[in-house]
Length: 533
Image (cartoon, rainbow, N blue to C red; front, side, top):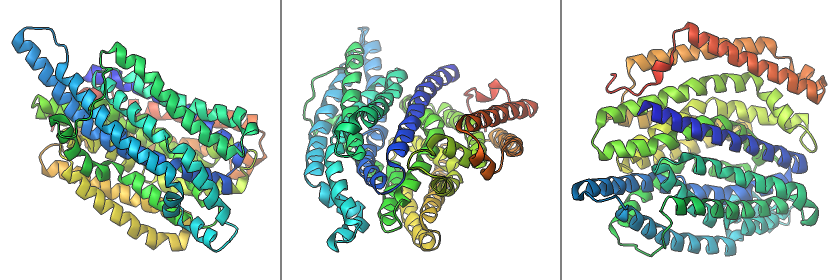
């Protein structure tokens, strides 16, 4: 089990790394052509809304409800084949995929058409400040008109990505992680291509980027179809609202909408409040969030993607000791990478932002403002990662009620924190509120698993985490001593900045590795063992 998890985790992480690097290139292009001003705010809002809905209909709540049921049906097919002595033709699994794809397709098609037609209403809800300006003929009203137009272009992305998520979940459950992990690369390529070559022929760079989102969704959708055919899982969709599998998924997905998407809902609510703040607030939060998403996606989401099918199968086979050990493995792995990522980004936040984005419309004042939001988000990096690992501990057991209760508490807390902090420290308060609510969410998820007797941090794991924290602290001190003052970084040429940043990162990695070796951390610490408590 351990070797298989590690191999799968490496595959997903490598593919995710490629995707995240291209995602950073995409953000560099966006910063270069639009900066962090009004047009960037408009595009980010138009892109954020279908992305938020993607979490609901695609890889977020849907995947958390679909994968456990799909794993259950696959186990039934295996058992039936063993009992009958016949070859496993995955009959029940194929039928479930046909029923789910047909039912999901009808629902998502209706939602997509509604979103395209009602895009001004949706922008009014999530960009309320712009709508108020539009009603009063204020200068900011133009952003409302443009955002409505862009949203009608980007909304079909929801339709494409919903099926991409479904096929990706099927392939992941079959152990074919590389395809789904690579697919997001195509979206980044499409957006970058449209930004560079489509902008001269579009009404504005923001319109070119919006069409890039549309094309990226289409290409992702087409890309996975041959792999589904190769796996023998390409089936004809059929409507089956009341079938056994779809009914079970429906019951699981409704509460999972909150349980999985709390962080995204919080970020969207932050956008509503940010629309009332000074121009640029949405963009500053966006670029800070994108840098946070790099380690979060690479390690947190990557490991969560691997362990969910494994946990679901272990639950179906009634293996509680291995279930707990697999969760423990996930916690150890994200801590191994999460703590140094947190320490490194804290120390090198401004140089990294400078090297990646400071060109064109993105000036040094913007670097400072984005870094302040990033500091606030980074304080909750490990909490965001823990949520990605702990939530599957519920969904794999088809328990969606507990996470939804926790999610509602966290979402309410986020709004309270917003109201407490935003009036005093503006957009930074919004980022800090998101961090605080995520920490609360992670703690409640862990406490629930512990109370249910499903998982508890072992003494060995707590000592292991303490060693990682110490190692990351030493690494931060080393990097801090190597790094220059902000004004010195500003005076450097771009090539000198890249060289200095590379040296800091490499020596930081070396110092971290030396410390964990000195403290006795070995490969054996990442084996999935039965009942280590």
